[in-house]
Image 1 (cartoon, rainbow, N blue to C red):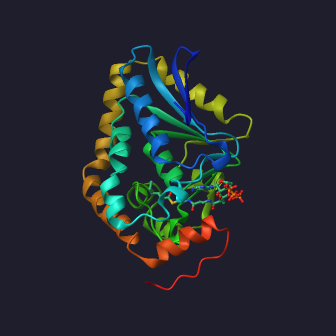
Image 2 (cartoon, rainbow, N blue to C red; image 1 turned 90 degrees about the vertical axis):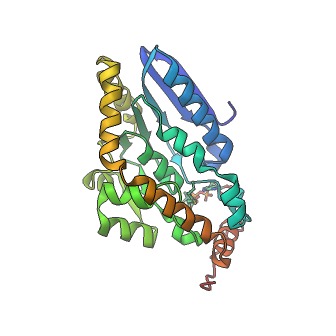
Length: 257
Ligand code: HXC
């Protein structure tokens, strides 16, 4: 594993996955997501693990999908790479996953948090879907999950402006379970994990599956539409301009083409 670290002996029944690309604020390149998928599949099969915590570092959970990896891709490249099959496999994890978030959880990073089951946030956490600022839109569930989590008006505001939510706001809107001082977010995630790990793993898994079913019945349709639209933004000059401007550290000039 190059971009994540997995520990399963810190506390009984609890595994910790740490995203580990600190220089890039844990930008989610495809290999990192594949490593997360592989780790989750292993942990799902491991009877000694009942609850999984995913975290980044103090500065960032993850600042989004890797813009440098995507910047020059065409819509067809994006379609054929099919990175979202990895995300679909992650979504199928049977054991409960707690995201322990400090710092940035943006774009794909925020979508990754929303793919988890519960969220403990440091008071420093910042959530957002800023893809619109680089000429694209959420592609890993953001338009569907954020809308279900915070309601239509707030989701529209966040996705159409790219504004960030503070940890407190994210708590107010129901995106996170608890906000704690920055020294405590991992500790609190472990406390929650320990409570769940004492319970029947069978009942916990079945309850998780049932809760997810309650809002996923129509999700496939929403995700399919979202993906096509996300790929389509890669046919625009604005996506090229937005992502190149980010890489070149300048302001983008969008032309609506
Ligand atoms: C690639 C990234 C990155 C990203 C940060 N970096 N975010 N690289 N992809 N998403 C890199 C920077 O290029 C820089 O590397 C280093 O990490 C530190 O970032 P800075 O920008 O210098 O830090 P700071 O000034 O503190 O600003 C932090 C930030 C900013 C506000 C989080 O980095 C930012 O706006 N990042 C992009 C956020 C974003 O637009 N996310 C959505 C991506 S699209 P160098 O080498 O230059 O020092 C997306 C689509 C999801 O997620 C759908 C598919 C899964």
